[in-house]
Image (cartoon, rainbow, N blue to C red; front, side, top):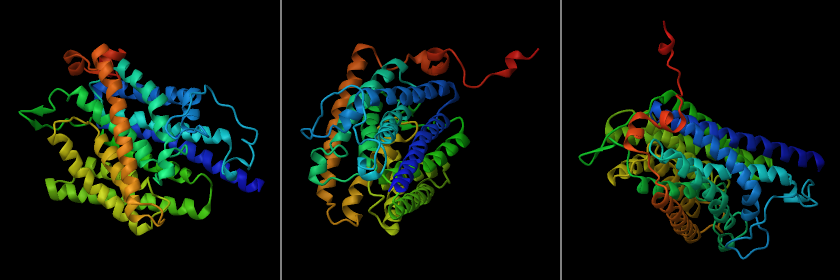
Length: 406
């Protein structure tokens, strides 16, 4: 028993490290798909999210998300965490991991929701208001939303299922991204005479590396959500995860080619991410064939969702709304269609999606709209044109060595 307990805990710690590594992937993807002059700004936000997110999750988030006995809607705020008597023994979590591993693994997830918003608001949001938003959203909104399912709340009792967070992580971030992009407005030059203009990213190789790192990180994101090193379930989960990612990428590239007559690498990359987000809600209850179908549909959705976001005059520089919100919704509903568990129903999944939509739209609107009215959320035109790096940080991501030539 001790050997199995140790093996389970080591696997969970490896998965925790993989999910942590995903923040490198997010950072690379975001800076790669945006312009050079805003690189420091994006990196600063990403580092802020990880560091403050972990501290917040320790101070209030973990207890708020996993309150034990509670009313099913919101737990009480108990500052700090302390391991229970059985927290380091196989009695805790059926021997899957220790209390401290549990905290750290879940803490890595918490930061991801705000990272999704970071990419959507890139190149035009003031750093101060973004930091305030992150503190409130990661500190309070995400843990409360998470408690409804993973903390044993009312949606869990209703039969709603979300294995690793298509809704609880990705849509929670995606709904906030949608509100933020709408309240912020588009970047200067994005729409001319009502037509969307391409604003190319400055480093597509870096964005590609970011997606591959994210795919690798998903081995921990989904694999760790088994909550033990169970050989059958972890291997099935990783197979369905990879097949969905591959199908999403291939179909997004194909549909994009048929629609636009070019082989668009960024669509290929976002298709992979869409497939990953789509399979995340039910990776442990899908056959490999179902995973391919779910990923393929997610890949097609990416192409049309990106076009739709542009058509309604919303500016999302990295495609966060299409990837995390649209594919998150699809993946959650797909559990009600393809799950091998007969207890998973489409209506329960639809109810869960609707509850999170209302909660996240309302809370993110209140936070961001208040910030907009009180302190302002958008940088000046001069700052946007010259770049946030020089104005908000006083530095450049890439040294100009020509300045030192004699």
